[in-house]
Image (cartoon, rainbow, N blue to C red):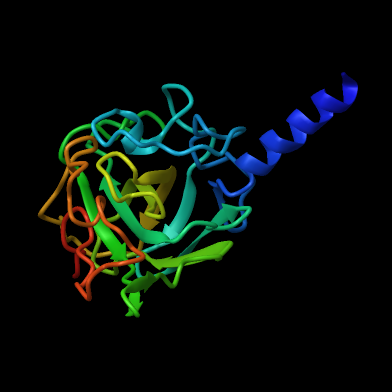
Length: 227
């Protein structure tokens, strides 16, 4: 009986191993300025693009204990734990915290999010390969022209290995609280909300990445904001 139980535990661990989280920005402790996600133990994904979980996948309402200082035009590095195991598209979004609120008490609701990064795959023999696959640290640049202030910084990796049907895309998401200094005065446009930015049938979310017919990949969501 003990042997059966031990085998079941090993099997469960093996099934969970390919999944991952984004628990912290480089140089910070896990879940210190990143809001703890509902999958912090299971590592499992979000699959419903219409759920509130698609925003920050938070375990509970409220903010993280800290806010990380970053520079406009500077580098911000996210840590993946253990790594980005599945093939799929990596993107990053930011949202300016409204006047009267702080990064710690803003929930990120409404059309406030703008995309600052989107990776694109290479195609060979009808299959896509993404540059983020297998990475444990991912670097992003904060737009130089952003106005100073508090922001939410959302990382999203959508695993597409089982995305041939609607709802098969797996989202791995985290939101960090950051304060941007040394920036400009630009207020980004083309803002989106989560949920609301995606449909399950978007070409970038419902796709066979192993037999793409030579088509160029079409990422979900808005175009990347540039200064």
